[in-house]
Length: 128
Image (tube, rainbow, N blue to C red; front, side, top):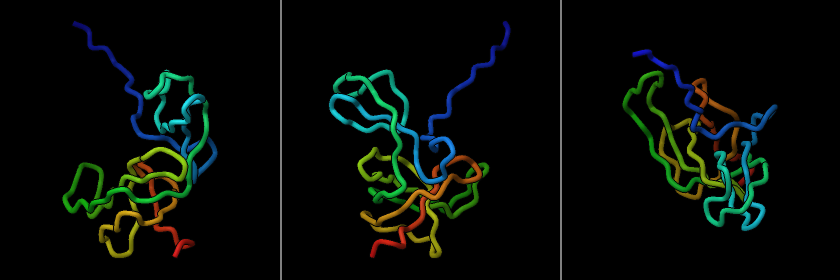
C-alpha cells in the first residue's frame, strides 16, 4: 500500500493580499450574505459569490482565555469570535495587557496574524 500525500487547505480566514488589516472574503451577489471562507455558492440562497475584503474593525461576540499549554502555543491565550463590521464572524486571537477576557461587545481591530498564522486582533483605542 502506497502512502499518498494529500494537501489539506488551511481552514482559517486569510489576510487580503498585501494587507495586514483586512481579510479576503466573499459576499453573495443576491442576498449579500458575508463569508470569510471560500464556497462554491452562497450557503443561504445558493446565489453567486463576489470577492471582497472585510475589516479591520469588529466587535467581540464571545471570548475566552486559555490558560493551558497547547503544542506550539504559550498560555495565556485570548480567543474571541469577532463580528467584523458589515462582514462575517471569525475566530481570532486577542492582544491584552491584563490577559483578562474582554466583555462581549468590545470594539477590536485586526492588526495581522500570529506567528502560527491565526488572525490577531487588538482592542480598538479609537472607540471610547
